[in-house]
Amino acid sequence: MKKTLLISGAVIAILLLAFFAWFFLGRDKTVPAGEAVMNLLPFGSGENLGESGITNQESGIGITVGEEKIFDEQGVPTSNLFRLSDASVAGMIAFARGGQTVVRFVERATGHIYETALPKDKALAPLEKKKISINTLPKVYEAYFRPDGNMVLLRMLEDGSDAQKNLVLNLAATTSTAVNVRGVLGSIAVGQGNTLFYTELGSKTVVSSPFGGTVKTLYSFPFTDWRVSPAGTGLLLEAKPSAEAPGFAYILSAAGSLTRILGSLSGLSAVSNAAGTSVLYSYNNGSEIKLFARNLRTGAEVEISPATLAEKCVWSAKESSKVFCGAPNSSPSADEPDGWYAGATHFSDYIWTSDSITEISKLLASPLDEFGIDIDVYKPMLSPAEDYLLFINKRDMSLWVLKLPGA
Image 1 (cartoon, rainbow, N blue to C red):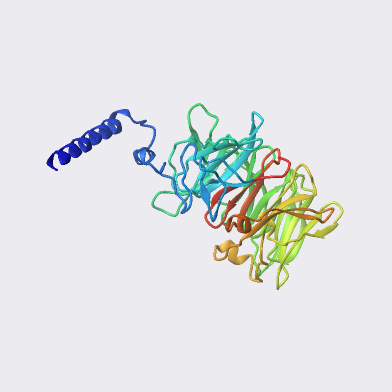
Image 2: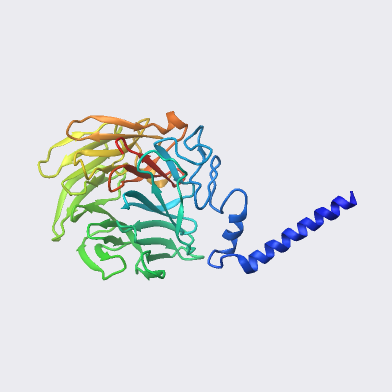
């Protein structure tokens, strides 16, 4: 017994000596100590782990989710719908590189930036998760990428306070470069020409700027709190939607002219197509949510079914009449969208594609039926080749991908 204890003690002592030798002499000093230690543990990195998934910083995108497997034992996707990040994300972008779709995203808790190349056909190996930036920037709540993925605006809180900080990172630079963006930003959008559009919180102006560049005032209003989103070479502007207040939407052209296109409608929310020629809009008619597509040139419009909030949808750039949406499997209540914006309510969505010309809708995925997963689609976007639909699950801010038919 004593001999066994002596041997065990000697083994432990050797392991401790080896650990301290690695910690002080052998580890990569560019990686934070806490993260370096977590990377040694048998469950992978110090990432937020879901209750039903094992994630590795470099290659483990997630093993199981919900009641069914969407990855095999090696971490290879077996479904067209899969999760790229268990950890909450602040924003993402999809771009093309070497014939593949690449997704970059920012973790909210750490500010670390990762990328994953998605398979062109059926995945034959685990998806690799590569770290692009190791700078730790806690409390990143929103991230807005330039379309090529090489620059990103991070909106975060200063350490130990509620003061907002806005930082632009150049990810293509040989050495990490950062530029502070002054002001307390309200609504933000990335438009054509790699331009940032935003309002300053409490301000009556909408401004534009290259990422971290010179600011230009586009328009001044008699009241505040506009939401901005791209609409061709211009902007779509709308008041924050509420079932308790009438809403209006406008198009602000590149020349500075303002045209009202919608309103007044309670709970109005709108999304423009890439060309700025059509909008998808939802509103609350007092008893339910309605969803319509309107051609801004002709004024023609059609109702889209199933109904959902417009911002749970994204237009196709390749087929101008097609939209992709997350739509609740049960109708939203008459109080929406207020509860959804406040985080008090969540939806369990099916994923649809609808055509505003043929008025035909097709079901693409039913996460609850297929996997027992409740997904609340948030900030959807299409990859450049439109082979993938990306979105955040608003329930936990995890990042998901759906491989589209024909991809």
